[in-house]
Length: 501
Image (tube, rainbow, N blue to C red):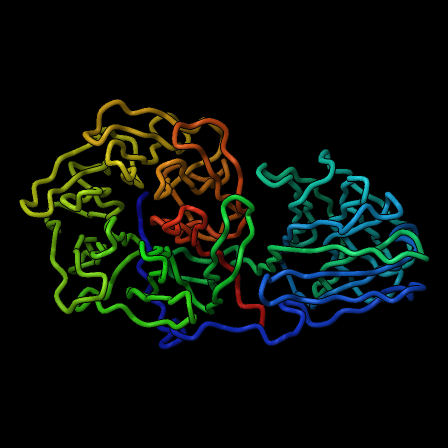
């Protein structure tokens, strides 16, 4: 139901030691021409933009053999590789190709599966099932996507594609390939006399959690990311071997605050330094921590007693040995989600009267007031900056959807109406829009699980059509708390993968 993250894994200082990329090709180990094309290709990686540029020639990638340029690494077992792709220039042949490919070997006639986008917009899952055999394809209904993904689950390969702003459309095929494959980015000019160039942004290689992982017991690695909302351009700030969750962005724009293993940490954007935020005795914190609108205070949700009841405390954002207790553990769990703009009250998901509802508490008097009172789950409450409305997610209409109500709990209004399970609306500081996390339709609407393929979506403050701005592997812990930059242009979030090395 509303179980929150209390990380118990004992990884010591791993939380303070983000991993770094050692390869000059970012996440890829090498690059080369496959099939001896007449003109040599090349690949480069920009650490500043975290983008890849590939140039290459090649007769074709079809029939019994291929010619192309390839930036790759070896991957074993299941994986997800995604990228934002774009050709440079008009090109010469409409059948020039770019995409993501997984091959048994580096031989020209190797069996393979790929996510392929042609210069004329044709999009398909191409594959060769046996060495030296013919190539076949499963066509995608989409033309000219910018977002592509190749996923392996056992012997099933799935190609998902979308134009930025839209949700994926997918095709798949059962293909018997090696357990260990050469996986990476490719380009083929489809003309041996010509070299073409393409750019690959937002490239993510994901090694997913094991199918039998135990939620809240088994964890995989984390990537702390920021993204420009208008363009979807993402940047990984740090990669961790363990679970970090739920970054806040401080109102001065200088720092991100996230939780890991029961503690809170600060990430300084200027130099990437990481330090523990002193929360005193409160060292069993979950990922429900929220900054006041002025950035001077932070509220936390700390588990207490043998029952591990979540209790809300407040403290200065600079830290404190003695956080101030706000809610009473005898009343039940309290999971913090928002401050009022006047800093006088907090709103939270409270376990009261045998159910979870949204409650408000006056910080000085400790008086609690219910804002929702339904047997169905209401969660993820957050004030708009003007204090007039509270945005929240509720399962009252079937799937989990985003709702808005007045600050006193009156006039609840549904904002999203799709088949996804939508959680954690976060309103931009300028009050013009909000982002939220969209889980797939096949999960329990009352749950927000770890390690799923999810979307971050963006909507006008008054509702309307949602725009998909990020395609990621994550879920619980990705964006549970307000994560906007103070200028309302970027958001921070966490995505997940087992460590690549």
